[in-house]
Image 1 (cartoon, one colour):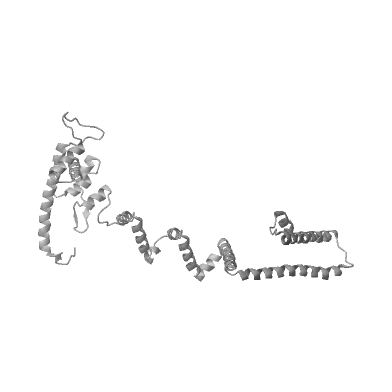
Image 2: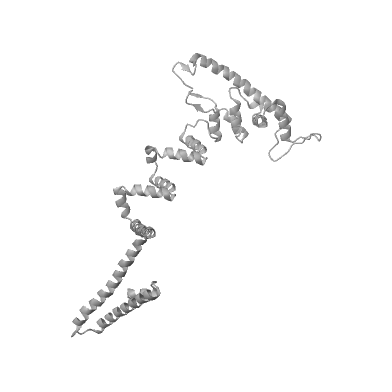
Length: 336
């Protein structure tokens, strides 16, 4: 509804006031009619006390629901409407009803359990900021009884409205995406909450990979991250794993690469043997005339044992294809 300085909608302010007064009279008549219908439903089926029952004539064969359903059908309304009239009328006896209050307000306030509190509530209508008066409205009644209002005003009411509207997962996803596009709104979240949001959104590996890549492209973020020992270790491990994967893929798609690697490894192996023999051939003759302590002899013997074990391992690998390094040999080569 558009509101201008001298008009409301399509009518002048003067005509609008006439319409409001006429509508109030009609609402008063409607409220009276609804209470009257509720009283008639109560006459057909009085409200039973909680945990009790009322005596009925033996010839009555209808249950409460059957009686009210028949009444609703005969007057052409829904059973739920009759039940609403009946319940509200039972909570507001004729002597407790007042003019100027709509049946909708009475129905909402009917949920106040204590009779005295419920009746006294009518004496304290809420303040309406638009009109500057104290007057009962459906939203005012809902605030009193703790129900969700139709037009939220306070922050708490707006939060509750959003919560109710986003219970559907699809709606929540759209709203969340829209809210996260607002930098000002995101900046108001505490750091712990922002971290938690990012963690939740990056549970998917593909999303986490994209976000991590973008973050590490920021020099300051990358430097700070690499100061963490665990993060640095995992990055180095990932680089090693990636290199191994790349090599394996190349081997699978390019058989010649494996042949080249075999040649290189073979040359390295033969070269190591030649290098060791050449080193001994150069060093051993120089030892003539030198004296060694028992500790030095023992150290050399341990080295020879390692060389002999390594040579045996190499020979077995070449002859039998046993390339696995067992635990005992590994300990010997480490000097343990």
